[in-house]
Length: 163
Image 1 (tube, rainbow, N blue to C red):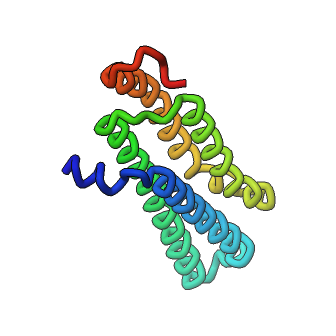
Image 2 (image 1 turned 90 degrees about the vertical axis):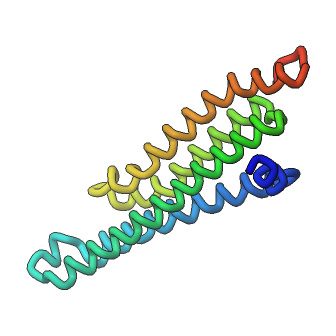
Image 3 (image 1 turned 90 degrees about the horizontal axis):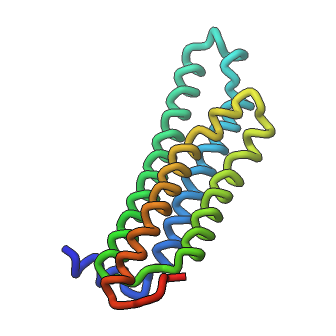
């Protein structure tokens, strides 16, 4: 199994990282756009008596939440695979680069959701909710990456830190 993962990611770490970012953007934008359209067209206060429209709204919202959940789960799983790649190959990315990447990813998460939330202030928390779990998980992975990065360079024989 190790050899397969290492072979698939060898020399393609940037492509995988970009693909994971695109997946995250797709999931968050799909969720935000769907929620925005639902709140503008199928407002629950306006369709309170129509059970068919309420059911349609609920099913579309559940579908948007599932798409976002699947995309963010695959995003985090992909980063765990990249983390494992670092352990196996002992080829760490420099810590400042990793910190910059994590910060950029968190900013992108908010850029995908906050504009919609600002246009629909009544549902601000609904737009930003999926970002919190993903941002916290990515931050935890980044913080956990630092000692692993030191360990990987120490085992490889470097005397310097990977900065």
